[in-house]
Length: 55
Image (cartoon, rainbow, N blue to C red):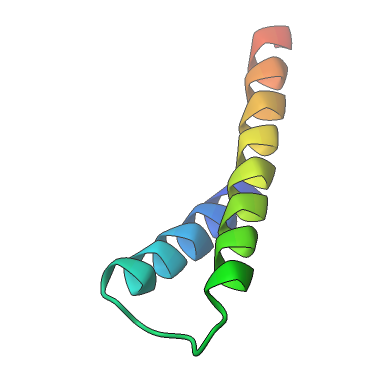
């Protein structure tokens, strides 16, 4: 569930970004948030893979 929510949030933010939605100087903050969420998602997927291998 947590992975799904993270993916949805990343997709939403990426969609806004690609459509050119401006955030008045917050581009750096948005990029940092996208990177953080992508890394969190990567970590979650790695843990999920390890759980699947163990079962």
